[in-house]
Amino acid sequence: MRVVSVLVALLFATGAPVTAAESTVWNFNVWGGKRAFTIGIETIKKILEAEAPGSFELRINYGDALGPPKKNPESVRVNAFEAAQFCVGYYPNKFPLLSVLELPFLLPTKLRQRANIEMEVLAHPLIVEEMAKRWNIKFFGPSFLPGYEFMGNKRIETVEDMKGVKMRISGLNATALELFGAVPTMVIAPEGYTALDRGTIDSFGFPYTYGFGSFKLYEVSKYVTDGFNMSGFMCFQGVNIDAWNATPEKIKQALPTAQNEAIDAMIKAYKEADEYWIPIFREHVEIVKIAPSERVKLQTVSGKIWEEWADGQTAKGRAGNEILDFVKATVAKYTN
Image (cartoon, rainbow, N blue to C red; front, side, top):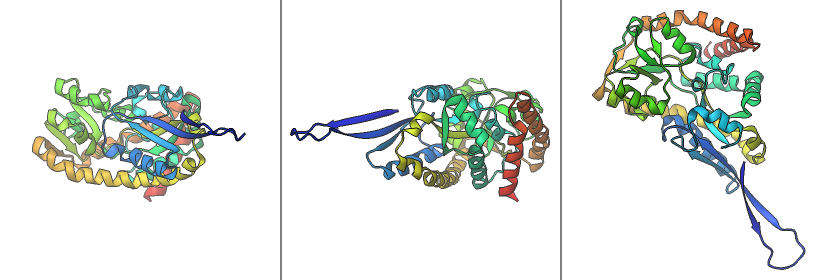
């Protein structure tokens, strides 16, 4: 942790001890610029800094200013910077149990429900242990995402239209699409524009609508789907545990309130993003409505994928079935 110490020299030899004022600084690394996705961390910053004026600063470094996003776990683990944005799909096998939240169609589509479920899963002892033991990381901020759609230069209206299409999607969602002939290709968000423009990929899976708008993918696309509403990345904000332990107690106590405020702010931001971006999309691309029956085709293969994921984790000595059962129960809690 970077601690700025200001020594105040005594003007008179009174025998009193020299005092020091300290300010705790967290440097936070995130890809891209300000957008609906970053409203959460921006809200947390505002609340925590107000709680301890002058003694805590959360510096948000946009545009991967501190290092490439695929190296965020390693960088935070060694405290190269204190905190960062993480999306599990960027790091295959690095957060294996937490990848449960990327299982296709496991989570509900309503943002409030999804946020509540993710917060409970992130607090589960096995998930806390996975982050701590593997990466010396503690979860501190929510980053839930809207459902995923596809924007690009291949028209997709049915699952059969996915055959042979190079699609940006990751993890277990990719497994579901592969069953219908898609060719999953991993591309990080900032590289999406160039990848579509050059034809490296045909279609880009992103949270609808803010993701496409924030990275201007509509400028190099012809079509966008509306109705798949797929699960996507499981994202969160994490901090180095040593940095967390050295943080003022007032900041730690204020964090739950900041998290709740961040959730409210993100839901509002995503709604406002839809209202802003959809009219712009209509001017640039064809919005292809997806029939509910097409989404059902993807849902029907998902249960098997869940069980295969759990069995695979269990075979590697992890509590895959326990975590999957916990998530299912938590989903039922918030949706029934």
